[in-house]
Length: 135
Image 1 (cartoon, one colour):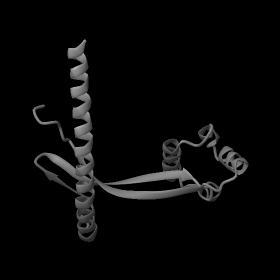
Image 2 (cartoon, rainbow, N blue to C red):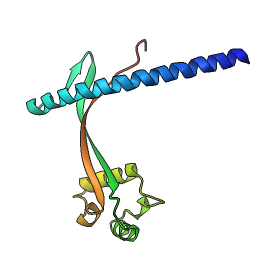
Image 3 (cartoon, rainbow, N blue to C red):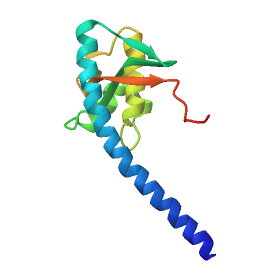
Image 4 (cartoon, helix red, strand yellow):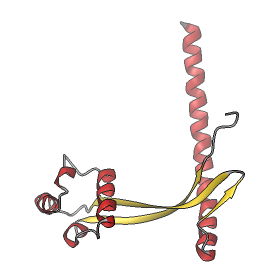
């Protein structure tokens, strides 16, 4: 049992070390990404392939219900536009974002719905096709 406990502790320590390392790498990545985004936007670049890996721009839509919205107004408006199914104890931001993307693809978000939610698009850079070393 002690051998297993020691191994468990080793694994937990390694995970803590990796988490700390990841935090530092995330900060460095964000700084580099900001520089690349500025250059790519200025030059009209949307992606590049390096060593078989595609690196491209990604625009993410993020939505949430405005904090000052009356629950009754929210329910009535969402019901009227086929979004009533989104309301549970609260509105899940991921589900709302998916529904808004769908509405945008079908002609746009109705003004009544748009008035109740906050929408923003975040531009970032993503790498596609990366695999862990040795695989």
